[in-house]
Structure formats: structure tokens, C-alpha cells
Image 1 (tube, rainbow, N blue to C red):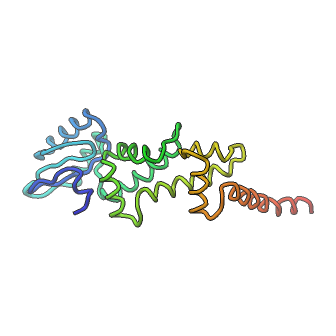
Image 2: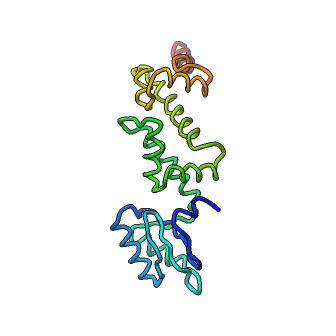
Length: 207
């Protein structure tokens, strides 16, 4: 069974509706009211989801979708895809926030932002992607490192701290293991490539 389906217990003859923007107790109350106004029997509502009894004639999806939109919510049509999309956005946001999050805290905060327990989030990621969530986060962290290394004003040690590494050695070792070169070598190569791209312009201006 998908871990995503376990976010809210599914009762017999019921269905879990994944609803975006239920992010606080007030949102839970309003979502319940809107669903009941549509004549649905609401069994449970929590952050991000509602469990409702399936009507005898099935759901009137266009009406349900429209009502939730008017109330400021959004019905997630594909929970797995939407969760992975939200995850990518949250990872990018957390990598760029200050102060930087260390590796262990990162997973916990990410799970909180997505209203899931860390273990459940990790399991859901494995189900829909190759590799682990930890590997994905490390890859995103090092992609951001490449971006920062193009900024000559930032020292390698400063970049390591911005990325949440506990030491320069840890950052350098992980970067070398993935990229095949040290952060310093990568910066030099990136600068050389940038300079080589400028040379044709200079040559053209000299004619």
C-alpha cells in the first residue's frame, strides 16, 4: 500500500481528498464547512487532507473542485505527483534560508513543512523516485554549491557554512565524491570556461 494513502486513515466506503492550503486549525474548520455544505459526510479533516464518505452516486468532481477553489483551497488531483513537486520547492527554499540547516535538522524541518513524519516522507520518496531522499537532498545541496562557487566574493569556507556543513573538510569530501574534483578546482574550471566564452567577443571587437 502506498505510504501516501496512509496520511489519513481510509475508512470503508470513504475516500481521502488531498486539499492544498489547509494549513491551520481555522483552515480545517472552513474546509469541513465547505465539504458539509456540498452535502458530503465528513469523517475527518487534518492538515492537507479530508476523509469523506463516498456519496451513493459518487462525487460531483467539477462542483467539488469549484467550491474548494472559491473557498481558497485547491483539490490535488494527483497526490503523489503534487507531493513530490512540493518537496522539490521546499528543498530549494530550505537550502537558501539563513541560517543554513544542518543535515539532520534539514529532514525534520522538511517533513514538518510537508505535514509528514520524516520516516513517512522518506518512504514516500523512495516509492516514487530512484534513490533515497537523503541522496536527493545532498544532490540539491551540491547543485546549489556549484551556483555559489561561481561567486568569487565567497570563500570556500563561507560556502560550506552557508550550505550547512559542519566543516570545510566534510563539504570538500562530499563535493569531490559527487563532482570528481575539489570545490577550488571546480571554481577554477568554471572561471576558465567563463573567460573562454568572452574571448570571441574581444576578438570581434578588435577587428
